[in-house]
Length: 67
Image (cartoon, rainbow, N blue to C red; front, side):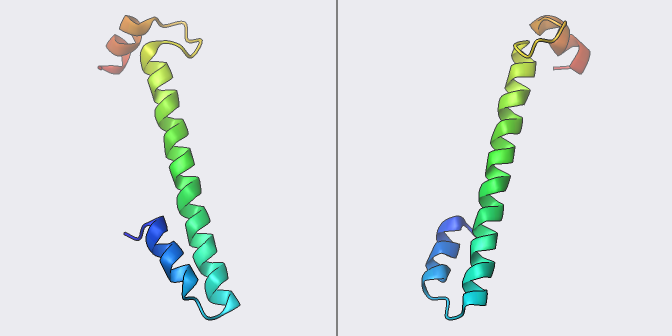
């Protein structure tokens, strides 16, 4: 798995515009995936804590979802 830091280093040595474009696309894709995962974790935490406006309280939610 390639990290953003590794891609940024590779970006500095990229020779063509196409290469830089592809590396930037990969960096943006990884950043977007991170943002999506973070939002999903935050939403799951809200559901778990019953803070999402659900009609289930925290204990009902845990019971319903087998937590």
